[in-house]
Length: 224
Image 1 (cartoon, one colour):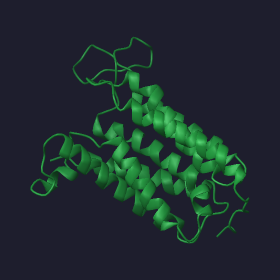
Image 2 (cartoon, one colour):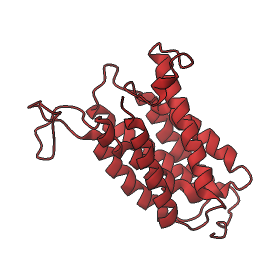
Image 3 (cartoon, rainbow, N blue to C red):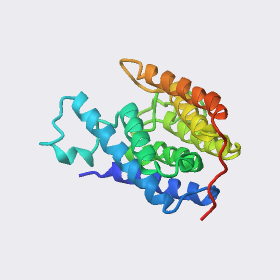
């Protein structure tokens, strides 16, 4: 039996915690709890959606949640996480902006977790840093590692932004969506991937950044 999904989740959780420590300005009380709960909800929603899409009954095949081979539906997981996070911080909406860099870093950890799951590789490449599956002479792009690096860099950039209403949240959403959009062509896929979802996410993120400054400005919460 393999429990590689749990290692990937742990990687995401550790980097999310690290992000909260690195960028602690404006964080609400119990920030990690508010972040980890929605993260788990997003994972369950995304995994359940992937199972249903593959014709697997999640009720009668509960073990498939942790013995993972079919993946997690990215758009469903993101939607589940976003809804749960907004709900968890409904009394302190500024908290979403404060936690945005940590969210991106945690997602970078999820992508880096491909190392535990043996799922880093994408399309064929002869670049010096490409690598192949065990026993294979064909080398491929480590596309999930690319995504992890891009998201980690994006987290740092978002942390450098000011405190305009929803500015960091919009930038994080746009950055995450663009990272997936730009890396999708390197992923092995019959359908080409959920490009439309990534485009919607990127446009929505930009819209939030544009509309946010029109809203009444709020100062960040006091650090805890």
